[in-house]
Image (cartoon, rainbow, N blue to C red; front, side):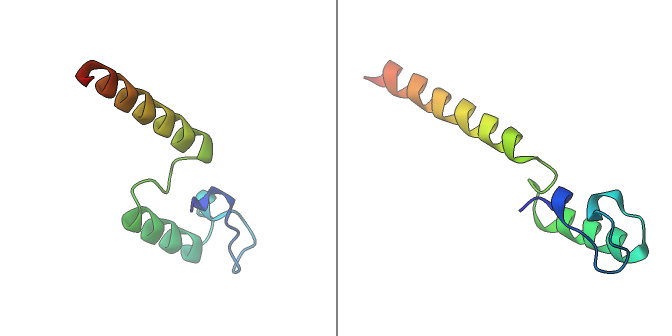
Length: 63
């Protein structure tokens, strides 16, 4: 899950902006847990498409 859409219960601002100490602490925790947390869904889809294309290319050369 990306944290760019999460809303802080303490200050009602997006967690990604880090306006209050609670936001900053949760943002740091989420970044440490998941290296892909900062990526938006479109970037993840693009990465998946590139990986599938590379796999298809490798499969074509081995056949």
